[in-house]
Image 1 (cartoon, helix red, strand yellow):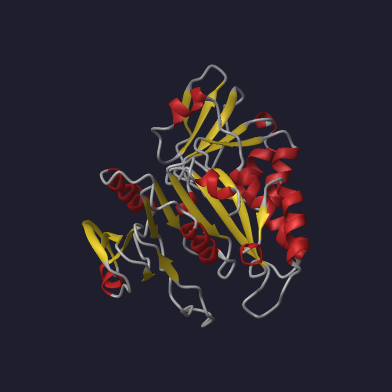
Image 2 (cartoon, one colour):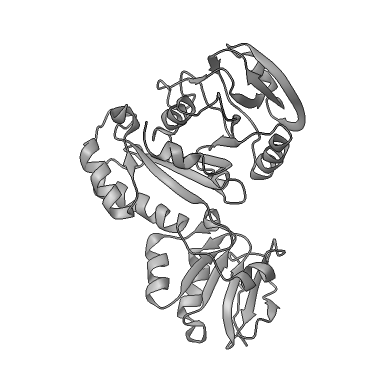
Length: 336
């Protein structure tokens, strides 16, 4: 058993997120589920997409199926609950609707296969997790969906595992570089406690904080606006972006001499849609980006094989990526 399994159990929630389809996210979920102490801990699992299909509906390639062990709790849509291949005890039918019906929660009484398709939004996941507390669940595991990093938001889960691989890039150097940038964003430092208290209630718009701690409204809804001006902000210490942070906004701040060294704050790393080049240029110019919520990245897993059949050298990939991000990197199929 790999050491990150013990670390998972220190938290009450885990997201498993793939940087691209076929990067080994489902294999990672299977590995984690197979090593959970379901005899002594209450473990619940769901998916923000659909997981457990034997054939990928987009690429038509084979996919690993999800097998639950006896004692595991799970939440899925009504449609997929009816298709389960295990005996289960129905626990709850929620008001949370998906395109495949309401979300059903049950406990596996035998081992068997299941298709997982739970709440389809970050808000839905939060409501589901709150509901799980009523059943004394010790750990919830969330399977993230393709290109929907919201499931890894610290507002949803305390910890996460990132899956990357040849499907994300067939070049080891590029793959390491792109993955390392995502890891850098996940590891961004928290802003000050004063900023968190001041900014937490603000769920939209652009705001700035002066050096005395005063809060000011930029009167703009998003950082995408082309009409953003920074007049009269000579005493600005922090700019808060409640929504998405994008390249153009960061570039405008970098070019404004009166805002040199300013701190940009976002809700969490999933709100950052900035290119590595723009991000590094901003930091090099003296700026910094911080977050109000942060998840613990426990490990990174790799799938060295792409859907087209291209295979990277697993040892080289794991070694170079681990060196770049200073975290353990695992090829789960090889480790098994």
